[in-house]
Length: 561
Image (cartoon, rainbow, N blue to C red; front, side):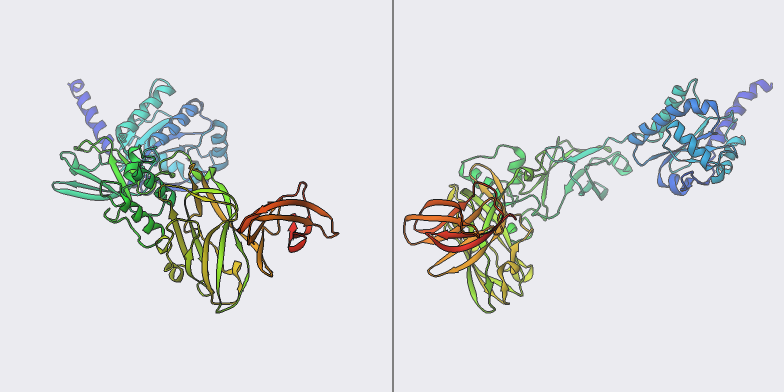
């Protein structure tokens, strides 16, 4: 009769043993870290795999490379959700011995020896509480959340044992089918707020790059909507060049063709691209407004990909589009800033006296076929005030292209201008902008005025070339009847001379060294108005040199900066 009852009793005993949760333990690993089973792992919804071993155990060494591979695979498949832990059952396995074992076997998971409390931690698994202990290595899987023990997972070979452990991990940690939050160039979009609305349930959470709702129980038998929202700095990724591209599209000169560009260009979320969108962008760039009107506070638009209705724990892929960014890093594989060239803008430095008003000219150092530009003049509002900005070369440049209000509150004046579809021809030495400024303190202009990073200083040419702008200060020379400027000073390979002429005529320009030797001599045809010419010696120079115009000294320059 007892043979008839043996199998049911064994099954009952196995069920009772399996239902016993893992006893808690605290060990100090051989690298000095304190690890608590429940506090650090089980209660944090992390799965733990234990290997009971000792350092001179031959089968443990045989299993070691497969154990390491499984560890790496599981860490990749379940990031942050799985930990492997080696626990020795021999008192001879102190920390130095355990560390030597890990190094010799190439093992990277934590391990604890007898000096770290491993003997007490493994004792319940050797006592018969969870089943017969057949020796080392013995592998134990402890479930996340519950602490349920899956004892002595063992195959006919190390490879088979690892496969069984991997299957047990997969059963306890099914891989969620995440949906992505990416741009149209597959860049992950961070910090997206997702709102899930179901008939009798709603929730809001934040995700970056991907998300899943499969673990939300109330959604398992319901249909629902998922709405992404992202509101960060609306200026991020937008520049006057984006407005130039929008203008070309509206005028039919160069229509936008990419779907994401058509979305990005709709700055007021009206469903169409019009001049109002350009006005919206300019207000943002100039600091007149701080958000995209009509977009509900959002600075991104998300498009479902595909647009199926989610249900029963499924989700939707979303493509994110940063409003206003028609060219930037959210969409293009590389950063276009890497390919930008630098262009210099020359300003004559001068001493300013408190209470006086001055007209400051910002000149170009090269030729442009200009479609637009942007920059921000930074200043000390206690020392300098910009009263007005004008341009003799830019069509329709007026007060709508800059914002003087920010100089009092933020310490800078943003400027943004774009052409009406036709480029503006600007020659080297031309005055791009004239600033009317009032000195509130005495001192050098260069101490009070600079370019600020609130708005990246850039010029946009008809060819599509984007050039970074920088200020170069030139020496201000007071000469009877004329103003001459030399920049840069000190100079490297060349110096740029700017001067006015009352009429068109031939002039002689010379560079003279301290001994009176002529090192450069050129004839130049001056035109009426301001002129600019580059003086470039044929060989490198070093030291102080005089600049002469028609035999008269008009300034001095130091070469060899």
